[in-house]
Length: 139
Image (tube, rainbow, N blue to C red; front, side, top):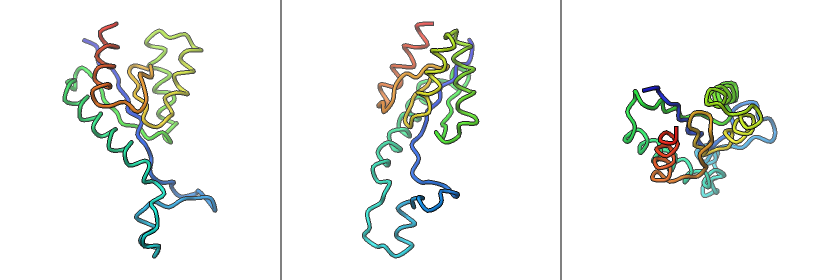
């Protein structure tokens, strides 16, 4: 059996160095800087991060290592993410225009990508397992 590629594009909760005057700080840094009681600017991302963790655990539990290569990617890591999705989409047989659309869709936080095809975003663990099972069974 060929090993399939599943990529979970995670949410990100902070901007890294080089963000200049428009940079944002994470919730921990705000507390350290003395803004006690200040609202965490990334609190809205926490649910996405926790759901991605639950999706990862559900997929890891359902699929063996030799069946599915499960990767969690940062959406900012476009140097890896874009070519990986492009190659998988073309290997899958998607026409180049469709493959290009999949590459763009895969850069969104919380995307679930199986062999170059975005199966969904913001999915629950049950939806993720069902979507990957259906995609693999269809081929």
